[in-house]
Structures are given as structure tokens and as C-alpha cells.
Image (cartoon, rainbow, N blue to C red; front, side):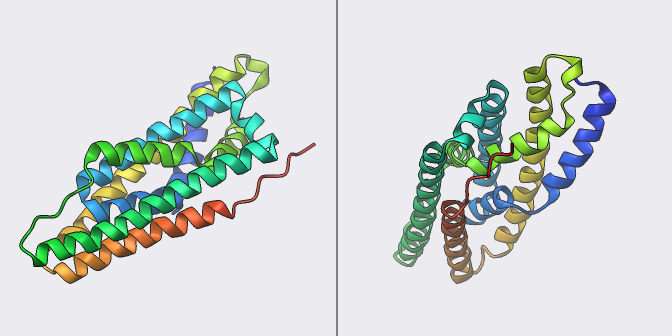
Length: 217
């Protein structure tokens, strides 16, 4: 198992990376702007679960197998990209439907925290870029001479996931404040929701264009 000083040094480095704006932060912000703080927090917790899937897969060697196979990497990548694009398009459609319902005197229909949680978990679990990150970053802090390499990987990976999740939750709270400030302006709310959906579509297209990391050695 890694010692305390090693974990502390890793946590400091992982926190810097967690605070760096990336796809996860943008996804949680977009989900929050679309559905509110509860959905944003749920999606942030969901991406945390998805991150844990990559930690487990990495410690068991599954991620290395996926990244080593061009076919598997492409399949996972395209599946995750298609799912993210579908969520984005649905968000745009829902924003327009809710706007029309509001004009007709109806009520908006939120996605709900359960679905937001589930979608966040799937989006992160189907992102091979996260697997590549864990396999490139975490092993730098693993000490083979200490033994239990898989356990070391799991511990450090969970620390990284916890930090990423905390940052995502903070982003959800901040984005919710922006959304609440716009609630009195229906047209702006619709634009925010449409923009959040477009951001998800852009993230999906970006994921689809991701290239498989070239194996070293």
C-alpha cells in the first residue's frame, strides 16, 4: 500500500488536475444549467461512479486491454460519444418543449435526479479518455517494490475520483446560482438550456474524434 506522504503528494497533483477545466466539469455545468442544482449534483455523483469503474478496470488490467485494441477502443469511444450527443440533442429538444409548454400555461418536465445520476455514470464509464488518464497518471505514483500494485492503483485512483467529484459538486452549485439568477427571464433560461445541450453535443463530437493513445514500448 502507498505510504501517507506518497498519497499526499499524489492528492496535491490530482487536485490541480481536478481543478483544470475539462470535459467532466463542462458536462456537470451543462447538466446543471439545463436541469438545476439537484440534477447537477446527481450528475456529478454519477460521473464519480463512472470514474470508479475506470479505477476498478485499471487495477484489474481491463483498461489496458481496451486501450491496446484499436477495435475495442473505437467501439467504446463511439458508444460513449453517441450517448453524449443523444443526451445533448434531447436537452435542446426538451428546452424548446418546456418553453412551448410555459407559453401554453403548462409546467416544465425535469429530467430528474435518478436519470441525471445514471446518465452521468454512463457518460463517464464510456469515456476511454478517462481510462487513458488513469493508466498514464496513476502508475507514476505506484511503487512496485512495495508490492500490491493493484491495491496501490485502486487507492490512488479512488483519491483522484473523490477530488474530481468534489470539484464537480462545487461546479454544480456555482452553475445553479447562475441558473437561478436567470429564472425570472424565460427566454434566457431557454437559451441556457439550449446552450447546455449544444455543449453536450460538442463534448460527444470531441470524444468521437479522440485518437487512441499510442502504446509505449
